[in-house]
Length: 145
Ligand code: 4NP
Image (tube, rainbow, N blue to C red):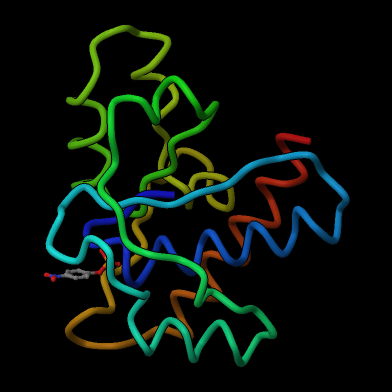
């Protein structure tokens, strides 16, 4: 799960998918990262922590990190929150089998529409972001399991 800062959207996405992995008894690993390093080492944004908590999900074990080229070897899917993340991720690698791992997460819920998860850092909207990610992760579980 990749966004810009790895403190708002992708930590929520990680927490939501971890929760669904557990309830579906799947043997999957999920992690999150940012394309930027502004917040490396930090906890998720308090608003993401509170939104997750309201849905019974604890994301306080997460710390922001920057996405690396190694992630393209270790993960089958690299899921971008918005078009900027998507373009940045795809330009990190050259091999087609790695480039094609990058997908827009909302395409699981709205195929081929390339909808974006809005950045809630400045203007808020964390609950709306939560609902979008929850819907996409529900479809992801069905499609990929
Ligand atoms: P995120 O949100 O990409 O969902 O983690 C942001 C977090 C921090 C900043 C921008 C977006 N920032 O500019 O510091």
